[in-house]
Amino acid sequence: MAAQASPAASPAAPPVPTLAWSDCQGGFECANAQVPLDYREPEGRTLTLAVIRRKATDQAKRKGTLFLQPGGPGNSGVDFVRGNYAGLPAALRDSFDVFGYDVRGVGRSSQVQCWDDPTYTQAVTAAKGVPGPDAYEPAVSKAAEFAKACQDNAGDLLPYVGTEYVARDIDLLRQALGEDQLTYYGRSFGSYIGTVYAALFPKRVRALALDGAYDPVHYSYQPYKYDRPQYLALDGAMSRFLDWCEADQATCGFGDGDPRAAFEKLKADLDANPVPTANGGQANGYTLVYRLMFNINEGKVIWPSFGEALRKAQQRDNTSFLLRPPSPASFDFLNPNVAVECVDKDYPSDPALLKRQVTTNARLAPLLGPAMAYGPPTYDHQHATACVQWKGEHVSRYDGSYRAKGSAPILVVGNTGDPDTPYQDAVALSRELDNGRLLTFKAEGHTAFGRSACATDAVTSYLVDLKVPARGTTCADETQPPSSTPTVAPPGTTLGELRNGVSDRLDRIGVARR
Image (cartoon, rainbow, N blue to C red; front, side):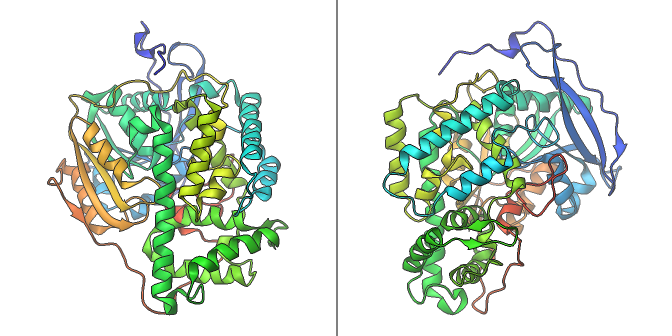
């Protein structure tokens, strides 16, 4: 691993931000926090972070501040708090000021933009659900264009958007809020942010719940080993849906007895004859794969809606929520999603290794993998082609041990059928941490809090009262698909994206959404 200058070696401690709170509707307060752009120069240039909180409803029971961190990278923490506050268990709303913020490079905190909206639209419109045999080289070329655009359009910011600096921001915000220790719930990529925080500041941990956890060693130091299980997990989830669809044709309603063959044919048909969309765009096989990738995160509860949406796609009905091309709101997420991971990850520079890894991923995950592997840089699965060609600095990348020696107990949550952060990642993190405890949710879908009453109760009890679940605790209360006529998701609704922090339905306000 590359040696890097350590911000901790600086003789001066960074100034603690002063938060001037003002009302921002709905019972929420908002403020801006000034933090160092570069922690190697803690009293130099600053970056403004947008923050939000809602005070504890029962001040007599108040235990402190609960940091909420959504997935991504690229999701707005301000929007996440606004959108999820009402659904939190009463015990959390009573016990904590609920706090969130847009991390550096995201949303209202100096949004990273590599490709503009027309360029991204052109790239995803040209992508295919069934790429041809010569798709690899054009994919690498397109990724090089993306990486160059990042440097051209955001090069002054990019070296400083890595997760070590994000974790250092959290510690300054903790101090600004008057908290001696951190209480934190992080989902998906938010689990990696929490992991880095614990590694840097283990004694400052009160409670960290890391849901949909990352294997941090693979993510940071061995990213090809991180990427492949994600391909396999996504394809595995899609395969299990198609198995269910075949077994319960009456409920699924897609495939005429052979949904796998019907799905492959549908991708190819949409590539050959894209469906015009209401906004003047078009949806093809890549659109279908892109939407499935995010929506499958909702688990079995969405399977009947998948069947109906796939049948609508066969009928070229553009009200199918699987035929909604990525929008500008998606691009606001995808730009930093790629950029942050290219700063965080240590990909080998060998182009021959890149080709072997990407082509093997596509081959081993035939349902959705080829579109992901050979598409433009968008979500996690497509980052290698851009990151291998990344020319920017990595000064804010965390480069150390993840053991968090001496921390309080840290709760790690993993789903056995997670299509986004594979279950073995949660197992690996719980073992990597000196004081980790694994909670298992036996279910499809991404993350457990809010989807499992069992897991939600366990996480809540841990955050409020520091009660750690017994070793080997497993929850198995996933909602099963009904054996009846499917309930169709409303047009334009993407349930899995909402759970993942992503929504095209929200208008951009500088950046509001995901």
